[in-house]
Image (cartoon, rainbow, N blue to C red; front, side, top):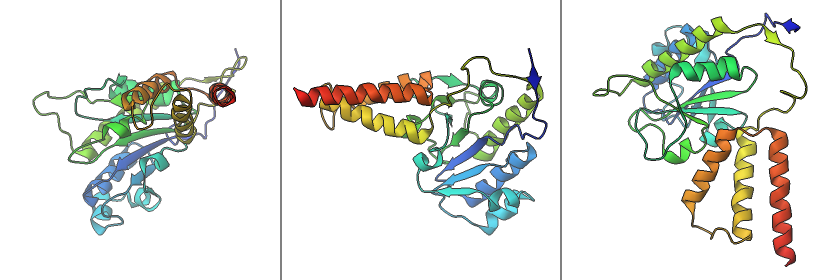
Length: 254
């Protein structure tokens, strides 16, 4: 089997660390430092309370280049619009069951299993983490194993653990095999494409009478979990949207 290896590739450049509504600018700087320690450079901030900030720059301790090119977004949907794999970090147990991974499993997914996909790893607010509707946008829930009696990690410490596992995983990247057949021809759907699909799905389910407007929120959440677990590619998404359009057209023709 033929192999090739792109020696110039940055094996972590496809992964972005996303911080949601960070309250303390010093934490942003500390996260930038943790990232640079592990050769990661892609930072995205969603509606930070204070940024730019001299405190963030001071805490970055030389990683201010990460801060300088950090992307600033107003919503999480905007931050992950180009992402094909989305992982949300949480220290809290949830009543809703999402597929869970630990840091090592997340690194294997991001670096070994999906090395060509754009990935977002999301960290929530310092005091409350990610909300359930934000986790609805994620394919996996990431939990860091730690002391059950004291499980709250500083956000920079949590990012450091994840970035370390990502960095270590790059040592296990094999020579890349040339794809066989159609494997890899269709990229996975992005966050923006999935958001559009979910809007279309919701509309179609109302049109055919399966759901009532403003109700059945739990059904949509379960449907999101099904499709997020599958990780649709763009061709599969086109097929599903074609089915939805035909279902709507059939309903209107009655």
